[in-house]
Length: 95
Image: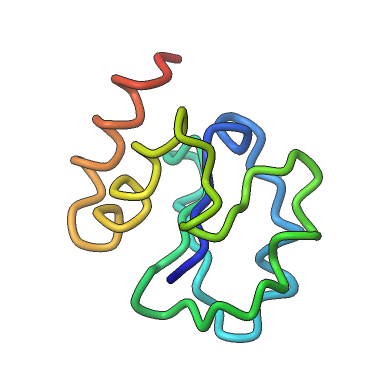
């Protein structure tokens, strides 16, 4: 299991979660990305980020609301193909 950042983060980009992550697994490119992403290979499932998110965008993968299931692969793919992740996000939530 890993944590996933979902739709409430889009166009918000609050970084409180980044500040508390002990393994630095939450990333984004400032000025380019519309949300933050959790690296599923680096996340240690500590849960420190979840209560820090002011918009309740972070969920354990197993508890992610069904309507936001598409955010799980978007989080994962961002770390290998940023353009594909951004395109998938744009398809889900146009700017």
